[in-house]
Length: 169
Image (tube, rainbow, N blue to C red; front, side):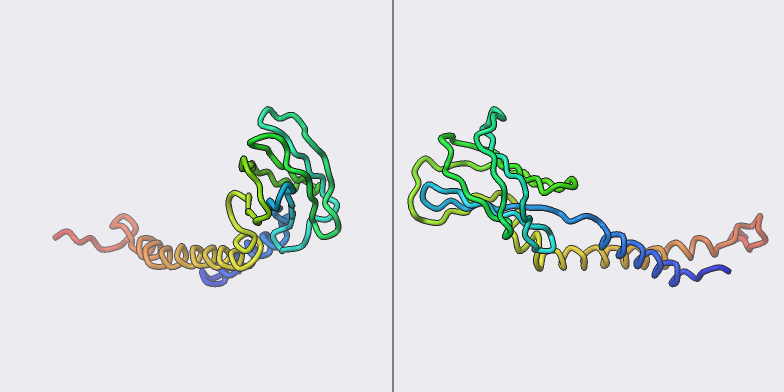
């Protein structure tokens, strides 16, 4: 039995959709500085906390400054290290790693400072995830439409050797 183009395309969409769902969680973390304390929150891309994850704080020479674990809410805290820059590595097991460099400001006050580089939590785990999935589906649809428009017209043209007519007079 031969599948039509639309059925084949739908099977591919469902296959890729299910394989994305079955893939491992992405892990990310954010860091906030309040006074002389850095607060780290680790979370998966479904916004669930990375509970009991190992947290390692390194200096710029990769020397371990401190080791800790997140609580059941994916949070941990530590005093600001006496360095200008440090690296935080969160290991939730199963290959789930989040790494970030933090630039420590020279003066600290009680203001909340977001030290997290890169994407925000909402972009990583919230509406940004849905947006990226929508872009992926739109891309697949565009590829299908281009194939339907240009791929089938080129295939349906027969060469004179195959018994088709030639445009030459």
